[in-house]
Image (tube, rainbow, N blue to C red):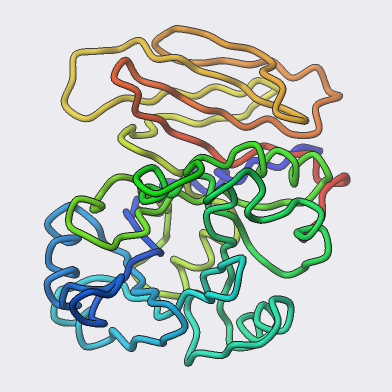
Length: 299
């Protein structure tokens, strides 16, 4: 049996919320979070975001008052900065233990963990074999916007496919890793949530009912009778044709189409199929995988 993480879209009882979970602010001049939290919230709201986490290095930031003031959903958190880095989201304080102990504590507090920028500085900043020893995290950053102006690569779909190919259901996130104004709105997550409550937003992400984007919007995602159909678009454009790549085990491109929509018929031996859409100007969208339920487990 294949699981479609976007099944709840069929009911039409939700809304798409734009979110970023890797944001530095309020720690002072000359630091990663050089700008005031209020100013950062205001700019993200102006850019169309409804969900935000201020995730400073080893520092918990309570943003509830800012969220109320700006009318946004706030998930408190911090960036765990012992190499390799992680995001601890929707937690109550900061705790710095071993990686596994930190993940366990994050879950105990009702939060979730995203492994950061897996290819920062070098390929396998997050060593693949090292990731094999961890359990309990929710996802990884498959796209981190700030890394492209630093070193290494901000793209980590290779790491994602490595984990998925082992039967680990790991979700792919795209974050700004905001430090300066020119980092804002480079990447985001679109979450299909029943409401604007923190519980519903986190629940949708735990189910994988969201997609990652650098500028494309998901129009349609359906999986019926073994056929996966998807369409996407850029905002306010007459362009209709996009490149649809259906990707499976070990990152193999199963099918590639240039069309107004993409369609893939399952043979039945696919471990998983995820879709990457690319526009004429290079903007991308990544869906979470449709996967074979009996062959997958949470990490």
